[in-house]
Amino acid sequence: MKTNLLDLDAAALAAFFATLDEKPFRARQVLRWVHQRGEADFARMSDLAKDLRAKLAGAARVEAPRIVGDSSAADGTRKWLLKVDGANAVDAVFIPETGRGTLCVSSQAGCVLDCAFCSTGKQGFNRNLGTAEIVGQLWLANRLLEGPRPVTNVVLMGMGEPLLNLENVVPALRLMLDDNAYGLSRRRVTVSTSGVIPGMDRLRDACPVALAVSLHAPTDELRDRLVPVNRKYPIRDLLQACKRYLEKAPRDFITFEYVMLAGVNDGDAEARALARIAAQVSCKFNLIPFNPFPRTEFRRSAPERIRRFAQILQAKGVTVTTRKTRGDAIDAACGQLAGEVADRTRRGAKLRLTEAHA
Ligand code: SAH
Ligand code: SF4
Image 1: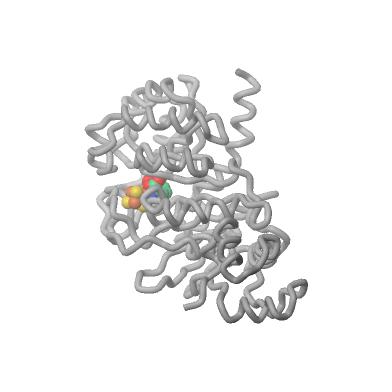
Image 2: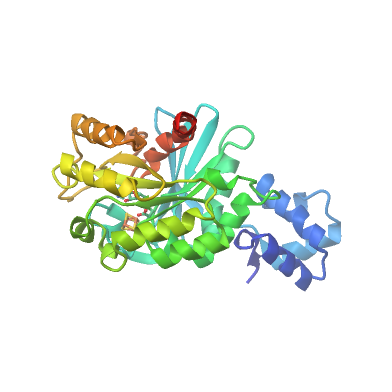
């Protein structure tokens, strides 16, 4: 079986080249060919010696997941459906904006955590994606989209819980950050977690990127129901883990995601309780209108309710953005937060404003 180079971060690629009796700088050259130029064919890596090209062709391959669906919405949002061996398809969604483009990446096929309002959770757990399958989404998007470096931001907010697959997620993150690969800054790469505390600590030590935490409820009683992993890692402990993460985070705040479920977690009382949580850790809130899917018991909060909820938080000094729904026609959100990134990228500007006032 040939080694898939998309599975290897810079260190692993250098180690692989050592087994081929090749120097580390050759590995860096190939890293640039594969990730910066999107080249999969060793024969076309023109500045490599012919015998090295042949050696690589015999021992290695560059293989991303197979695209089985490709759809675009009028607003430019694009969604790919990717077939991964022995599992259901996963998706990757690209959201263009002026001056930036955000790719929403999946980390698992399915998810074991079974949040009440999540269609991925309802599909059950299939398996972890490998590093090549995770970074391969970025590799494909850059190849298929127009223009130089179309993807400027990555969010791990597609299918799956990234912190339950750190073994494969961390090398993929390292490639996203590597100057010889994608060269994204840590603040332009965001991992979203439902609150898997040991994973938060491990990510903090291995590769601290921007962190989003799916809070969705201000009390353990309600969060136990919506986000079952809360029974293991309750809110008080989660907030402590957020503080530990911030010691090394590339941003000085945690983004709390909060899905707006009509009549469930969207009342004035919940907003006030959230403001008390927000006072305990440097954070900002992202309100996400619920994205309905077949057979769900939940409904999306009305726009007026979401506005009022945001106002209560803002009145208490909390920075809040509300997701704008995007790519609806192609179901880009698909139970996930693909559309959320449209706000996420704007938030940077908003936050700087807030800081300037502080
Ligand atoms: N497992 C991670 C990351 C993937 S889900 C996590 O839970 O954070 C990304 C975001 O989409 C999470 O905030 C999740 O709660 C949210 N989400 C899931 N289903 C949704 C739905 N139907 N509508 C709106 N947001 C949803
Ligand atoms: Fe898994 Fe995230 Fe969906 Fe919860 S919201 S089931 S953690 S993918």
